[in-house]
Length: 267
Length: 183
Image (tube, rainbow over all chains, first blue to last red; front, side):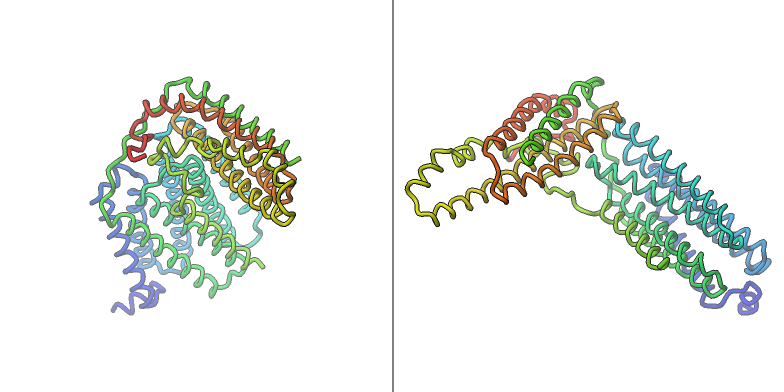
C-alpha cells in the first residue's frame, strides 16, 4: 500500500523516510523556538521555521495528489522555494537589525547600505536570470542563485559591521546566522555548478545536496535553541548628541597627523 | 573550472561566516564593547618613551664607538634595533587602541557621519601600510630616532586629550565601559 502510494508520488522508500526524518527535525526545532519564546526576539525567523514545515506539508500533498514529475509540482516547488528564500532574506535583515539596533548611530549608517546592497544583488540576479538562454529550470536556478547570493551577501556585510565595531554576537544568534549563511553558500555553489549540466541525474544530485545542506542548517538552529536563551542585554546608554561631533574631528585629526608622520619616516 | 570556482565561492562564504561569527578578535587586547576596560583602550606603550629615548641617545652611541670593539658595537646596534622594533610594534598597538576608541565613540553615538567613518577606515589602512614600510626601514637600519620621538609624542598627546573624554563615556555607559578594579 505504502509502496504503491510512493510509486505514484515518484519517490523511493529511502527518499520518503529521509523526508519524514527531515520534517520531524524541523518540527522539533520549531517547538524549541516556541518553547524558548524566540518569537519575542526574532519573530520573522520563528515564522520562517513555521513556513518551512508548512512547505514540507504542501509539497508532500502535491506530490501525493499529482506526482513529482508534473508541471504543477514543478511550479509549486519553485514558488515555495521563492517564498522561502525571500523569507530568509527578511530573516537576515532581522538578525542584522537585532544586532545593530541598540547602537543607533551605527544602525542608521548600516541600514541604507544593507538595503542598497540587497537591492543591487536582487536586480543583478534578475538580470542574470533573464540573460540565461537555458530551459526554464536553468533560469530558475540562476534566479535562485542570485537570491541566495543576496542573502549571504547581506549577512556577511552586516557581520562585517559587527566585527568592525566590536559588537558582540550572542551565541544563539551566531548559530542561527551560520545556518542561514551556510545553506545559502552551498546553494550558490550548487546552483552555479549544476546549473550548467541539467540532466535528470544532476538534478537528483542537486536536490540531495540542497536537502543535506538544509539538514545541516537545521542542526545549527537546533544547537542555537538547545539551551535557554540568554537574558536580553540592556541597551547601551548613548552619548549625548553632539559629543560625536566634538570627538570625531579630534581623533580624526590626530590619526591623520600620525599617518603623515609615519609617512615621513619611511619616505 | 566552473566546478572549482563554485566550490571555492561556497568555501569562501562559509569560511568568512565562521570567522566573523566565532573567530576571536584580531587583537587580543581589543575586546568586544561589552568587555571594554578603560585601561585596555588608552595607549600605554608611548608612555615608555623616556626609557627608549635614553636608549637612543647620541652620547651612548659615541661612547660605544670610542670604547667598545667593532663586533661589540655591532651586537649592541642589533640589540638596540630589536628593542626599537618592539617599541614600534607597541606604538602600533597604541594606534589600534585609539582606533578602537574611535569605533567605541561611533558605536555609542546616536548619530554618526558616514564620511567620518569611511575616513577612519581609510586612515587605518594608510597607517598599517606606513607602519609596514617604517618597520622595513628599521630592519634595513636607516631609521631616525627623532622620527620615532615625534610619533610617540603624537600618540601621547592624543591619549591625554582622550583620557578626559573617556571619563565622560564611562559616565554615560558604566555597564559597557568600566575601569578594572584589579588594576
